[in-house]
Image 1 (cartoon, rainbow, N blue to C red):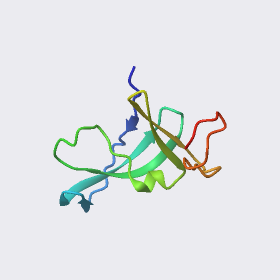
Image 2 (tube, rainbow, N blue to C red):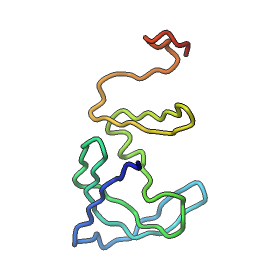
Image 3 (cartoon, helix red, strand yellow):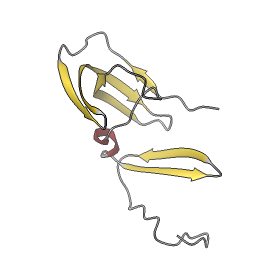
Length: 105
């Protein structure tokens, strides 16, 4: 089963272009406002996003503007990659500290 990010695009697009700086260089893209709903119920009601061309291998990239709103962790247990996000931030996540389950960090 695949988790789906829900993206709601309002009728009124921002009528502007933005230069996006990425790992492969810069691109000029159209921007719009969306409401982003994550599978865990977190809603970001007004998020400016860029509509860039090209196949990047996913439907949406979660940027640092969203990640900086809370705590973000990526896990790869049994070869299955998952991510977890919560907002607001409530504690430090430190994978160098031994787990309460007895596993070594």
